[in-house]
Amino acid sequence: MGDETLVELGLSDDTTPPAFAGDGTSPHVVSVGSASKAFWGGLRVGWVRAHPQVIAQLARARQSADIATAVLDQLAVTELLGRRAEVMTGRRHMLRERRDLLVGRLRETFPSWDVPVPPGGLFCWVDLGRPVAQAFAAAAAAEGARIAAGPLFTPDNAGAGSRVRLTFTRSPAELADAVPRLVRAWGRVAGRQRRAGSPR
Image 1 (tube, rainbow, N blue to C red):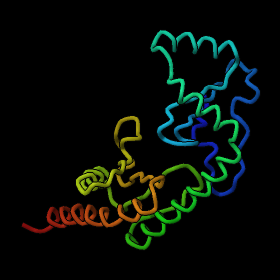
Image 2: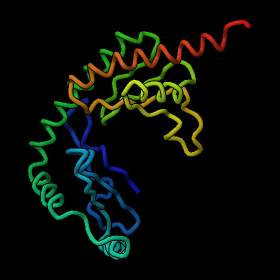
Image 3: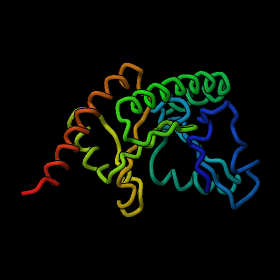
């Protein structure tokens, strides 16, 4: 099983690797893609690459679970797939600019954090340097900034306690507005830690 939902969002260059499922003749290889990642989050349409018999089995299973995906959304995705190279070139350019904006602001504002430049995708994975990811995510939400704590992405909700995931898909104005909110949230978390560590 291959997850290709972000495969076209390489931001280091504009090359796209070949499909994981190849030409779809192997009965043992299945890959999935998603318009919501490649094109726009509101297009909740995905696809499967696999052997025709596997596709037929999946289609029958899908029919028993629901009626169908919205026709208008499917038509929109069909149009976008027909113009994929043109659309993805613009999308990657936009995402690079927003990624660089967010990474630059975070590095400037939070020098103690480890903020790598992601080579692709839609998110920055930031290491806060201390295991407060969940507390920081809660404090950020209280300030109106939605971020995800690393433990949410682990099988047992443990580990990755110092990491948070921040999206850079929002507009430049929204990304710039989010940084002061994160500053206030970080101040709350750091203040609680100082109080907890102070002698009684």
